[in-house]
Length: 316
Ligand code: ADP
Ligand code: MG
Image: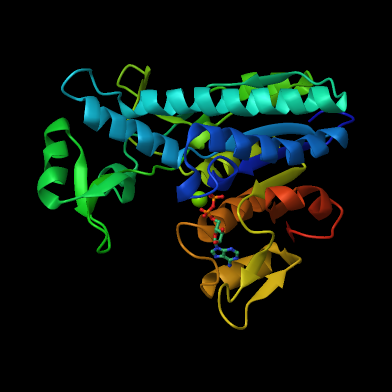
């Protein structure tokens, strides 16, 4: 993209925002974001262009719970607005934390957070057969009350009943050119938060929000493909990717080819709902843009991983 600087998309996982169930309060959220931003600032010192994307699952859950508790007094927030709310609040936290870190280090780079819509197909099969659980678990009777508001509910693997929604394929990032222009102008951009706010086209071609959630790693991959970035960095809760993960013969991987990753994935080494979607997302990036590189690591290891001393590198 930019002539001199290399460009990276960094997807920060839930662990960069909330460390654990015991540390969900706002002060702990700030601490987690500030810690992650220290590690990201190191990339800026190395003169990268950066677009930061992030998850929002727990934050969406908190707002849904507040809706439930306040239903007798105030209208519920629709899911697309919850997406926009969390992009705003998390984008603010990252922008402020990163800006403060820049000031400490004498870095002068502008930062902008972009509320991002992502187009999905209203005929996406996910809408017929929703599978993505959202919000808290409850009894069947209580869950069924959500049905009056048009939610689908389901029993979730013995953990209780909860709402389920579609996780449609992201087709187009509505604010892509805005993000591109900002990056080309030297901005550090925060965007596509929570996978983007899912929107569909109605009969007249107007965009409208829809009750769905787009996988953050998939949406980040689309962004990385369309901007043809040099590096797709997945920042998550593990320093490296492993085969035989959590088994006695677990083996951490320093690097692999896309074909090796595909083969390991076919053998079931990357768990569905966690590492699996990340591997699928980075493989579709490498398929579309074979000159690109992929790095998977955790925030404290970003600098060492860029030096080839940690992390898992994947190349086409
Ligand atoms: P994020 O919030 O970043 O999306 P996830 O929890 O969804 O994080 O996915 C990352 C997690 O995937 C890791 O913390 C790890 O527990 C798990 N995981 C599953 N399979 C593997 C594997 N083969 N190698 C490393 N981590 C794995
Ligand atoms: Mg995840």
